[in-house]
Image (cartoon, rainbow, N blue to C red; front, side, top):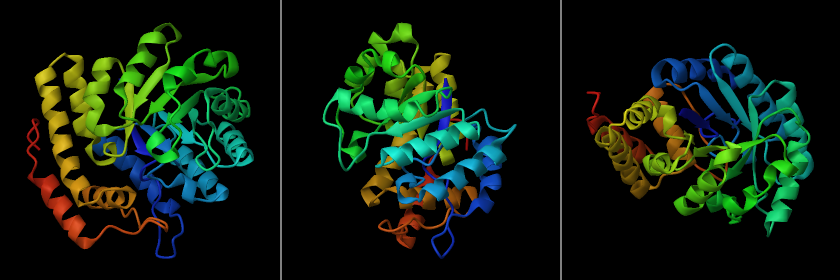
Length: 304
């Protein structure tokens, strides 16, 4: 099972002027590999504020992750979704040119596809610009507002997108996920689960792995959970999942989003992730103090 870091989450450090900070990425790569045992990366997605960045900024970040991750990371999947089809196609071509392990695309979220054929048409037009690169659909209906079931989308998808590899499934609808896995076993699609607090449930259904924001700072703990599940030692796996959930439940009540995730990653790693880009605003000092105290109070099964 593969664990990926949703750098979708925190791939962007910013200075006071709100510019991307490429200089921290080499340190970030080394931290993820050595401290969190995370070697699979998802760039320019949600928490990395990909849709708040310019096309040029997204290219620069993708290039830097590919450069700094060479010989250190196993896979770098680059999110190339955009509101504009032409921009998404441009990003797909760029990702292919720099040697990305895969590309992923969310559904357009302003002028939304209203049925499977409309969504599939958009995805196909993007995937065709990178015809040798594995393609993933990034399903996150809570943010896109596109609630087309993945089970429906996958029916015959390889006929339209030969490079289709799988789904980053960031939704709590485990029935949809289960039906996808059950009906597409012969296709050997990859299902990477994106709701961190429910990962163990998704693994039990048959998810192949995960991509999530907490793996930036709880990657090693989650890898231990994956190992326990594989043994199988369900009781131990549950302990890790419950403790992750305890922390997330605590910070969600305080107000937890992209900005707060960057703050947690900063105090755990010591790497300055910078503030988010407007309209998001930085986490408060009160949030940081409470979140840090809570995380430090948790006693993990491995003794840390």
